[in-house]
Length: 456
Ligand code: DOR
Ligand code: ZN
Image (cartoon, rainbow, N blue to C red; front, side):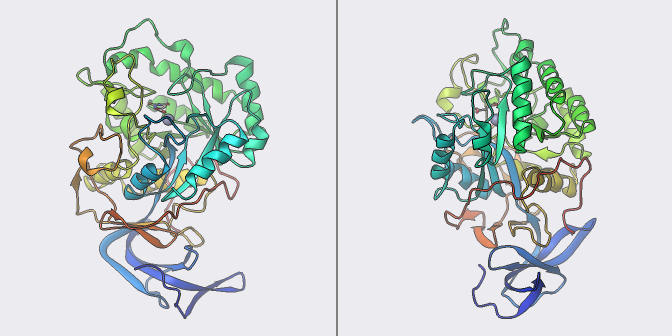
């Protein structure tokens, strides 16, 4: 059921203006520390206007025993748009996977071809996203010493800085150049996500043949020194460290009040000598001991954000000899389903997942979404925890055609509402090109260290 234009009764008023509800969703959710039955009233614009036990005044859709959860925000995707002919993703294919995987907003990285480091390139990328995106998109601009950051900051959603070479990144700032760059980014007041690995700590002399070798080439030490350099930066910086792989580094960032993320692959996968280049990522998969410590920190709610680092490469590219194969794996469709399956298995509390996947990422980029709260965007999922699916690349929508999570269990949203409009029904995409490009709408907050309730 989609919102009707004919709702008549007024259900709530705000700022002297009456708001008519267009749709009421009824189901169960996690609210105020426990599972409750609730009804969510959504207006014509797709904003949550009423939350109660029994609402009236609009068509009502009851999801029964299923859960109503906020859509997630993914702070880290690479949709390769614009890109090369051989690139296996664009805004249409990437946002389709996001919609099916329960993400209402994805933040796209600037290491495309060309790199997004000028206003013209940013505008060109906006033009590509407009009309193609099926969910909302935020665009990062590259923070480089030569970029005109003030101009970019007026249009971009956030900045991204690479401290080490990776896919389509060769040059990285160090020393005084880095300090100056961080000060310039802080002055723009836009959030900054950083790929924090220090190449001075890489062991380039090792010829890698498998993921454990790759872990030796780019060790945790490289992450630690890069994070140290960032934490010496200006205090006004709205810092977020991408893909943290180690629990002690996570603890340090938490103590300093910085935001950061962990990816599903670093939380769920560790280095195995029998694995090939499909398991090659930057930063590398770590030892099982380190992975478990990171997972335990996540379960305790000590990792503010979950992000996919969805970085697809074709099977052909991944079949190159290990040292030459590109780093990265797809995950935008599977991130939330994998973690919802951990909730169902009893390994992960639901409110901890919702805080990390929905609430805190949205706060960091100043977006009023990610919680079932008045005034928030009605980007909502219907999740039936009883229905599990075995993940198989042939049933996913990634054009690269493979997943590192083949055979894992996932719980995929049955329905997805974007601004109150249903875009997924029965696990199938039924929406349109309704995604918009968003920027911070309020001063982004630093990530609160403790999980917060998902509704107020
Ligand atoms: O594994 C990765 N792949 N890490 C990155 O930092 C970049 C990404 C990509 O763009 O392929
Ligand atoms: Zn990335």
